[in-house]
Amino acid sequence: MPDQDHGEPRGSAPPASEQDEQLPPGVIDNGGHYEVDPAIMTIYPQFATDFEVDRIVKDRLEYLYWVQRHFADRVLPPHG
Amino acid sequence: MTVTSPVTREAVAELVDVCGTGRVVVAPQGRLIRAMVPAPFPFHRWADEAPEVVVLPETTQEVVAIVKLANRLRIPIVPRAGATGLNDGAKPNRGGIVVDTKRMNKVLEIDTTDWTVTIQPSINMLKLNELLAPHGVWYPDDPASYPVSIVSGRIGTGGWSLLGSRYGHVRDNVISMELVLPTGEVIEVGQGGGRKIRHSSTGYRLKDLFLGHQGTLGIVTEATLELYPRPEAEFPAFFGYESFDAGYRAMQPFCRSNLATLAGVILFDERKVQYLRRDDEAYIPEPESLQSIVAVAAYGSEGEVAAARDRLMRIGTETGGRYLGEELSELDWASRHDRYATPLHGRSRDRAVHMSWHCEDAAITYSQLPLVKRRWHEIADRYIAEHEVFDNWGMFFYTNNPYKGWGDFLVEIDIGIWEQRLDEHSWRAWTQLKREITQVSLDAGGSISACHGATREGEVELVPAELGGQFDLMLKLKRMLDPNNIMNPGKYLLDQAYHEEVG
Image (cartoon, rainbow over all chains, first blue to last red; front, side, top):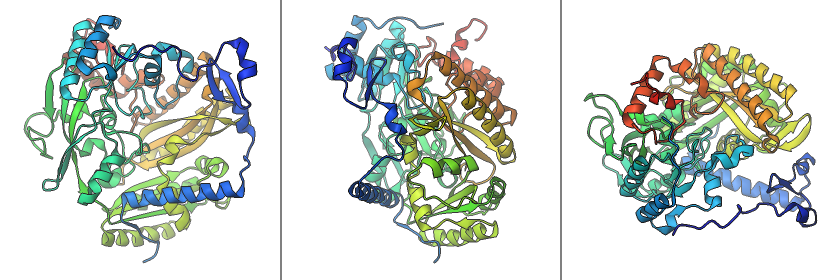
């Protein structure tokens, strides 16, 4: 037989009576589904340590250089 | 004719006979996720939009068996590939069977003599190009969704490429296809009868009928694609201008530079530049005096790209542009795919909120760009003033003509939508906003969609107005090829094909 019906979709919220004590900070119940609280997005800019910034920038540059290599053997500078 | 037959237990058992147990999904997780596409989605209607069963075929024969079953039992059937499109082709309107083709992802032949690659079409372009790279060739379809979208979805959409001015778009680079028609027949369509022939004058050119049909005319099961030499070199450059008008005027010399390696010219308007300054981490803030940006990119052999580089830099200077530096030019161009997935910084009445993204994507001639820009912003701003769930992320204008830089442009306005707050009232406002924007495109002599298709509420109502007599012909073709209206019913207003007066 095919995959069986395993009940509600993953991530769906528990019954209302249990919600308040079970939801961790930063999580809301939106129509029966757990989601990140949009209020978190109002903290802007968000705090990041120097270590996190370094890691993000390094990974970001590594990805972008990979994209360049994926599409062409080399990128020409603006002047020959 | 409306297909309404439910998917019965017996039908599911037949599908299991075709595909085996592991490739037939009835669990809600697997069905609900296949009700969605990345474009703004009415979550408040989610349960109504889900298919009743999902199947994952691996062969043409399995697809044929599924389509014949759906025809016999009059069950709606919806082909679904990567489901990364920003239109509704891959989601069911009437429940039924979703045919998720992602397992049909094998490379069948890399022909380095006649320069073609034949595939089961549900392979991702990034993966395909990794396999092609050792042979010194590539398949240059480059949508914003490049890392995640797959070829069969691009065929169903008739997709648009960021490198289209150099390499053409999907319609130009699919040489031939094997298709399962809505009646279960298998046909090969291409140029004439040969699978690898690029141009033929034998008979009608039917291939185009099956590029951009949004899953309403069949399921592609094999495709033979064009190959190109892998580029030796790339040159991207971004130039800043003091006003939108200056950037708009500067586009023409770039677009008409007669450079065969020119892959694209893009103009960002002042609102887009403001948005990038405000919320795009990848963007390096530039002086406030810069109000528009023109970006260009060239690909090809090193000698050709070096010559193009020199001319493009000269045009930038002559048009009063300020070159924005290697770091921004190279890395912002390299991040061209990122904004497909991550433009999540919205503002609602000066609060930062988590938004998803929608873009209108009309095709408009150069002469009409300023008018369309002004009217689209007026419409968007009026709705933003009334509804806190929308945000205006600016516009850009991108060369649209395959193999040429001039003529018409993909015109896009990016609108952030606070999807978590959508309800029926704001959804209605959203579709009305789309309708007004779409009407402006038609009034300007343009096309509703340069790249995504036009099946969504708010735009699909205007498709007959755009196509005129061509829409009547679409209805006749739909009824002829899909006599029981099982293939993606409810899309493109094609149910009208089954009214008695059409035939």
